[in-house]
Length: 190
Image 1 (spheres, one colour):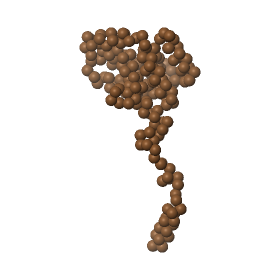
Image 2: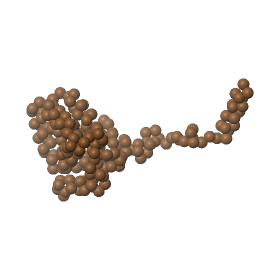
Image 3: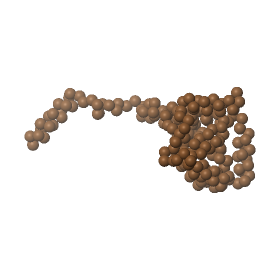
Image 4: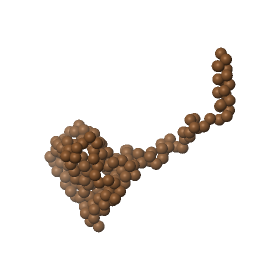
């Protein structure tokens, strides 16, 4: 199986399971463009699986996050030319297990990402893939943010253990009602 086969399989998966046309709220169609990057197959599979399971609109959600992440990248000192060459070389050596990924973003955001990546001497695909990998897998010190969301959606008690959220609002014992009746009678006479 080649990386092109995987790209076609992932693309067909999205055509089948998710709307292909995503219109970002508040943008006209001519304000939207497609940005294509290469990311690791396992990152793509996990990220897309989590996004599908969570039920968010992929492009709109990623657009919102990338808009904030590019601001974070802009705060870093730029790489040296030598460091940029090293990162590009390292990246090209791992292209065999990557798949092309296309996302619809505003032209303004694509330009902002391209400009900041150029200024900081960070290959755009490395920036975006690093962020996608963090969303899907965490970074060693932090669990996957999307994994946490998935866990909460499937088990709202996941962090606190099984707690009884209903007894205080959905049920009242006869003993409690008797005490409330007595209090009402007592305060009603005063």
